[in-house]
Amino acid sequence: MFILKRQDVEISSVQHPKRDQQIPILTYQGQTFRLINVFNASQEEEAKAFWRDLTDNQGKACVLLEEPERYSVWGKIRLDQIANEPDAGGASVPPAYVRSSLLMLQGVFIDIEDLLGGRQAGLFQKDIAEVFKQWHFPQAESAEAVKSLLELDPINTAQLPHWEEHHLNTLLQELHRLGKAYFGNTSFVERAVDMLQDLSDSDRSQFQSWLNRSPLGKLWR
Image 1 (cartoon, rainbow, N blue to C red):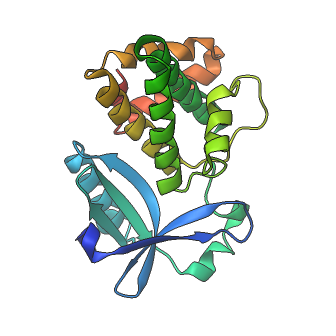
Image 2 (image 1 turned 45 degrees about the vertical axis):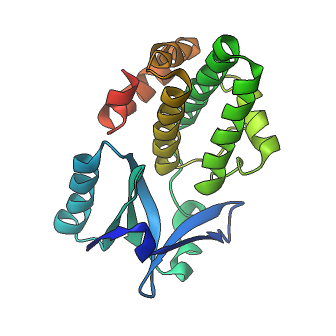
């Protein structure tokens, strides 16, 4: 359908009727769209290819939102459709993906704390909390929830957050952006990926296969 700028649209959120979750909603000329995927600023071609595939090949009504730091793809939806979606709306990704992403988040946080000090770690915690809040991550929209996620044992807990693929895409994109801002380079990537060695072989293989297929894979190599 359209490539839009931030000033063209209104972005808000609605409470999911069947889940404790805020859903980002884009409104353009009286039409509503739900977030499908997020790409970083350097992935313009990947974002446009993903958007064109949905619109041209799959016949879906979608918009591509172009912002200075990211591109995002949104699919048209009526708000009353959300209540009738299977599995309370939106498919959660396999636990291995969430577990792995949390380990990488914790790896960057630990790296900042160890190498840059507690003050910088505290600032990073606020920055990642703002990402969670802006993109309405379930179970991560308060400072206390973010602190819990940074201290959680992702491998042994059964209480993983119910995140969808676009949440993980956003987290890994923003985590890379923040890590580069704090360290001034990408030295943190290898150490964050090393955190995955604590996973079972099957979980690690499952997540890395997904990550390598995703547009974000090249950031974490």
